[in-house]
Length: 77
Image (cartoon, rainbow, N blue to C red):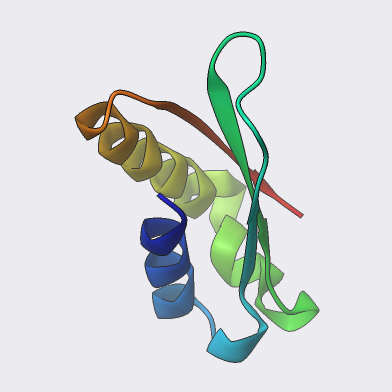
C-alpha cells in the first residue's frame, strides 16, 4: 500500500523527491494509517480545491486496500 501512495503522490507534485510516506502499525480496529508528507509548496496540489484530490487519493487507497483485505486511512501531514 505504501508504494501505491508514493506513486500517486509523485504524480501530483512538482518535487517528487520530497514525498515521504510512513506507515503505522494497525490499530485495535485493524486500520493501517499512512502519513503522507510533501514539500510545503506542493501541499495545495495534494489537497486540491475543497479537498477533492485528497478525497480521491483516500478513495483509491481504500479500494486498493480492499484487494488485500486491509483497512487504510491516509493522513496528509
